[in-house]
Length: 326
Image (cartoon, rainbow, N blue to C red):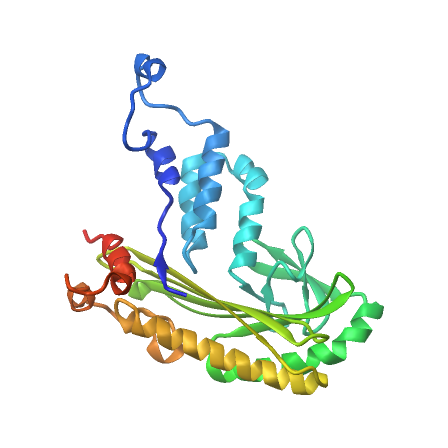
């Protein structure tokens, strides 16, 4: 559950500047060759896909514009990097606004074909453009026997969780899916909220994912926080926590209420912990803590002293080594 910092992988930088990994060991064959190494289209696409997958929240288009300059071949990029576009949007729980204004999420649980997703709230299908981030071609989804069997229970979860999200998250969106996995029904909840403020040099994203077994009451959740701050420095933070519990098996409305309480308790505990152990609490993108302009001079107040126990310095030390000012 301890936050960690991630930046571009060394491999990406290595390919960009065409330099070997450190420590450098001369290769006789390479030493005989003169001039910089020329990247093949395959290498360029591999670099592009890696960069797109690591794009900070809210900055996909900026990264995409940069990788176009690396590849210099839009057709190759479109043909070979489409999987990176899809993986990024599904992992980020990218919000999709349908033509009628209704909002849903793009996730792997809603994918029904290449570029096609289902909105579980309205049981409609829509096409999603992973480059433009736009939804279109909305049409009704098939109402099969599984849908008729699971929809009443799914609706109970959706109503209570949508109410919770509306109160807790300013720009939040929730999608609740009913699946049948290995002959057992499962409710899957995906929740997203974000604050993108590039003019203030930061973008933040909150995601949580929940799996519930109505038959056993087993619940597992994954809470994720992503944040990028880039004024007078470059701070990219990602934090994740796994939680689990078992609910008392009961009627769907009762279990939905119990799940909503557990979600609220778990998310609040994680967010409070993240703020307490952070470099600066105002860096975290929670509704009441949206950051404004930040002075890097205040960083010194949060660095560990030489006498601080090792286990208490791990997060701060990593954060300090990943802060670069220019």
